[in-house]
Picture (spheres, one colour):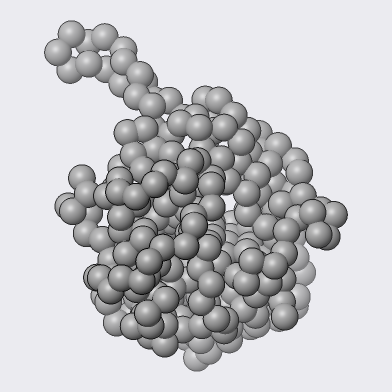
Length: 305
């Protein structure tokens, strides 16, 4: 059983292997200043408050919450592209004080270079690292095959579908070989069928690479289907209301688990947490078992705003 499988089964901790968690988030707060439109005075807006979370090496954690709860802000703090107002973030035991070179980030937009081919986009980070040309090709070949883009190496982004462009974006980040992969609603811009295909491909990539992944989403079905654990956020200000373990078997495919009773239990429990129902687990707490209930699978933004 892999380390990630043992996490999913509730069987591995950082203490067992005498190493710190891959990611530690301690008491994070993020405050923005904004101008009052009436009197022009500076006002503070607390986007995140008292956020605490630990992610083990090789673990797949999703963060789910309503629009505006600070999910993307938390991801940018993890990447080092923004700084917390209070608290600290550690990766591999080291405090994040700037752009984290051991993190790769995939955003909602594909952010590909339109003048570079699929291969050249994937090799971009390798060029920055001065990796020799022959080795770059070997690495890009591997990831082109991994994301099922063989035959499209010389195509340009405008010649690809949205799902294919997102695969290029994922391959580019993986080729750089980061310790941690951060993903900000990476499938939000594609249709439902492509989204499920991409979710399954991401699971396949994670199973092969065992990267530590943190993915934010507002979609409950996606959060459960991908994760070892789901961190559920509340808003105003954003904090982690509960952390729910996903004890569904791996290897896993979304379509294979979506209609199972255990999936429906988790779906209903997370739905109630987002609706501010049920007992509060506290920031970073682990959820207790919940009764079996059959209910819908995902949340609409307008249902919780």
